[in-house]
Amino acid sequence: MSNRPNTLYLVVPCYNEEEALPHSAQVMREKLNRLVTEGKASPRSKILLVNDGSRDGTWKIIHDLCDRDPAFAGLSFSRNYGHQSAILAGMMAARQHADIAVTIDADLQQDIEALDQFLEKYQAGCEIVYGIRNDRNTDGFFKRLTANGFYGLMHLLGCRVMSNHADYRLLSKKALDALAEYKEVNLFLRGLIPTMGFSSDVVYFDVKEREAGASKYTLRKMLTLATDGITSMSTRPIQLITVLGFLVSVFSALMIIYCIADWFMGRNVPGYTTSLVVSLLMGGLTIFSLGIVGEYVGKIYLETKARPRYIVESFIWKDGNSQKNDKNNSEQSE
Ligand code: UDP
Ligand code: MG
Image (tube, rainbow, N blue to C red; front, side, top):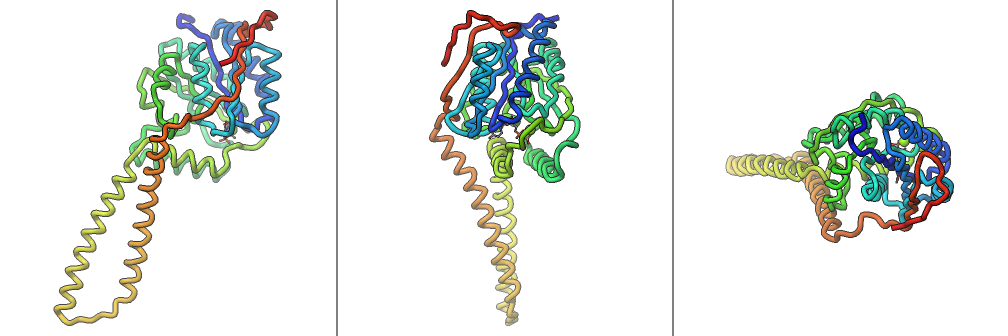
């Protein structure tokens, strides 16, 4: 049934993954081999490991894998740019050679066996296939709470994000080419990709425990992702500030009329509590609103500078058949 071209690139972001990577790479390699043998992916398919400025031995592992086996390709950033940039860089590099790119985490938490379903949906005509996790049982209480809160807030702000879709996703060449047209620095792929349209479908998969090592998503990284997500997808917070400002102004006007009336009637109430509460409330609201506006101004500042979203320090890509080791490989780099 494989009618559409099917050179598959698995794009794997890796940040300090020396503990998980050796095993993950092997599992991915075996899976790719099976897909190739079954005719679901072309023998030119590869696993592209993106080193997101790791401080441990991750790049050395990637380098060794690429040296031994042309089915592996490696890309290394000059520093840590974050998960979103890593998968974007991987997809953009894959675009040169692949018909299909699937992004998957290096810790194998996302079920790699779901790949068959992704490819079936692609063959059925989908340009984008979203992986949706079945449940959040493997997450701790805190992660579940923050994730649900975040998706709830995003929906409230009118963003089309899919709940429980992390970045396990298939993009066809057509979708990759469309994604390349987006030049924004403030990147939130989960929100951006659904806005591109195209025929798409979802695949449900189970989330497993991390294979090895600890989560690389610190609270700070999660908060950054959440703010990026909101500010890159919605300007509704600024609109809400306007509405809030209007309501507060109406309230203040009524208060002024009330005070003047009081003054004319000769009522002199001390009113200490009232004024304190009102000024504290107003101070808090003003600073909070300024903060939100500042967040957007900051993002505009970054966008206008149009700095590169990441810097690729090295790229290893060898021509060769992924089904078996080919001795006549020529090394290329971009
Ligand atoms: N990752 C990355 N850059 C970062 C943080 C994470 O490339 O700055 C990668 C990490 O190596 C992994 C994926 O993003 O492949 C997801 O990270 P992790 O598994 O630590 O997140 P969690 O599953 O805990 O949300
Ligand atoms: Mg993980």
